[in-house]
Length: 509
Image (cartoon, rainbow, N blue to C red; front, side, top):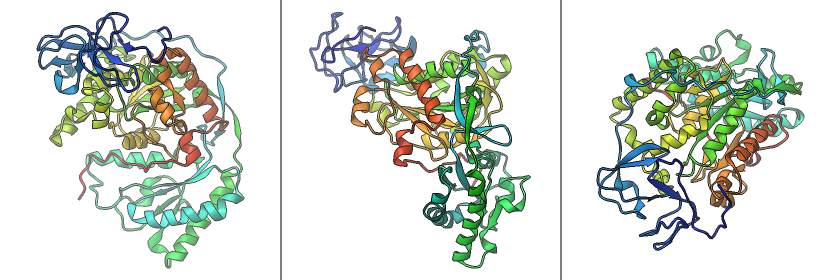
């Protein structure tokens, strides 16, 4: 795309088959605006929203990304604003009829010699942060643990300068739950995998109450009891806090000895997520992240994309990319699981997108999904993880999660991500304490509004100031700098860290 002056009217048409385009200009464009191609707007069209490139009769397919995103509710004249009420939701792809592994992409040329500076753990894994993690087995102990963590940070941490931070891994599980229900495997394995996150350096520490259903020894099976503290065995609040500080200091002594060493990029596990998406997500930030994902795969890393409801309506474009039929069937398994999960709650995919997504120009979940999967790049899909499972292979992985930012982030941490790349169009100050989050803005206006929250501005792609490839390389290089501790994300700079949120499909008793 050639560079065009900011004041000139500009739209983006993604695919030659598209009969709609989105408006690029900040604030949108007024009625009467004429584009160089001769298209004239018949009404004001907000930024990111769709304009009809041709006359669309009632019932006509509305096409974006070369795919049908819906059908016209009534006749829509050329140059009109296609706002969400004018678009009916199409039928989702029938899972049983999808092709599996029929268009497996050829491997891209290896990207050799890429390294970062990380913390090598005794089990061979690598950390990108040096953290003391204190895991709770039940929500009841959260208040005591948070009090203790504040004391550790002020009284102990200054003595151990090589330790980056202390993180309380709190959650709402453990008590009043059907722990033996089949679906309880999801929150339990999530908590277990969080406790063993590589950024904690193997220094496990669990604080429990003593009467919960998820007992501390179930959080870290196989570890000795020196890693567990039970509050009901302590004599009063002060003794509880003193005992936590004593356990913490023993682990800080060990963590403080860790030093960064040169590691291959193949040691990295990177999570990809979007939140506060808009119509630009699928043409700027997500394709740039997808390009970076391809670079990471070429370098041997593990890259995972997620969010079932924001994949389901584009799954027909992913199953052909599965490396084999087994992986293709695993993709379908996760789609079916979530279809059933939504049905049990008497909900369906129409509950997504959120009001902010619609304000940003996304008419429905189909349009959102088509933009969302751009994060996956062009590599073959090598594996599939159920929610909370730990990654054990390299390449591009689909890690099934709900679309909720906080649940997705928690599950990706359990799957072992060292860093997360998070794209946003509407804007969110989201961050994770356990792993750095690089936030990528889809629009120039957002990057300009939040210059000290957004780490990368992909909005330059829409205005022709940068290419997808250039921003993709920028993200790739920034990932290595952040993984090495040489640069800090804005979220870490400000200490913006969201609470963890488990996905618990099992009954609460």
